[in-house]
Amino acid sequence: MNTNPFHEATPDRLYALQLKLRPLAYGTLMPFSGELVHGAWLKWIRNYAPDVATWLHDGNKRRLFTCSSLQFPFPPSKMREYERGNIHLPVDPAHTYTIRITLLLGELFPLFYESLMQFHVASLANQTSDHTPFIKLGKQTFLLEEVMASRNESPWVGYTSFADIVEEVKHIPLGEQVSFTLDFASLTTFNRSGLRQGEYSTYYARLPLPIYLFTGLVKRWQELAPPDLAGLVQREAIEEYITNDGVIIEDYELKTHVVRFVNHPQRGFVGNCTYGLRGPDSPVAENTPLTVRQQILLLTRLTFYTGAGYKPAMGMGQCRMV
Image (tube, rainbow, N blue to C red):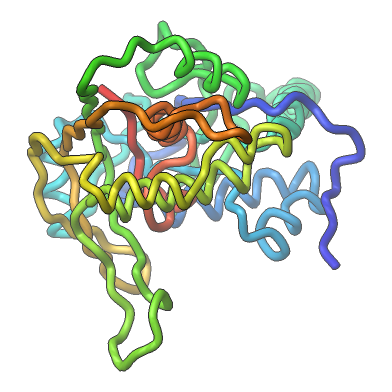
């Protein structure tokens, strides 16, 4: 049995961090590198806490972190062009690049902080603090310049707790209809295989239909939230609300897209989608203080940390509300 290696629980918090990196030498890298970042992040943890790395990789299927691809200083339209063509891009020591890491288990943040302190101390001891390799992506080695954790530094960083999200949605004024827009910033798709017995093979849905998006997020909330909050989101009620067209797509600016993993292409979509939640609200159930609309709004806030859909731990499904 693969058991939790953490001996003491920390608060149930969620973190989104950006790491600013500088390449050690000039070279090139594939435009979508989420798979490489995922492997490098696990290797980093393994250097400081091998039991935790093994638990995260082998024995735990809840995906307790997400990783972005390496972010290049190009407009999104150009990056999508490069990704579709798998055009390898230059990395230059004169420039910095970023990766985004989200931590979905409170214990991972102090582990990461402690590992950074150990890394810094070791660098100072070796008198190489300005040139100590941090991670390697493909054949390219990167130095760590900065860890960004403040919302003032980037719209893609921040932190919260499950309890804070619940309190936030409780105080959102709800009219007859509520609208919100989600930005699917990296390739997103929904794995629909294994849902029914039949002759059809694996299917990856390339539209963010409410039934695909929110049922997956329900599962993530129930997996990750502390026991006293996990039951606040009710799958059956949300599925019934969606089936009855309580959630509608009001507008969208989506495009099909494809990226290349190391050994295979992956198809999906990118862009923005605006959803409407129609009232009136159903009565509050005895075992949750949240209406169905509040539960869905809670899940939209969760996407900032968990991502949406398939393989968010490998750069896919980076998502935020705009």
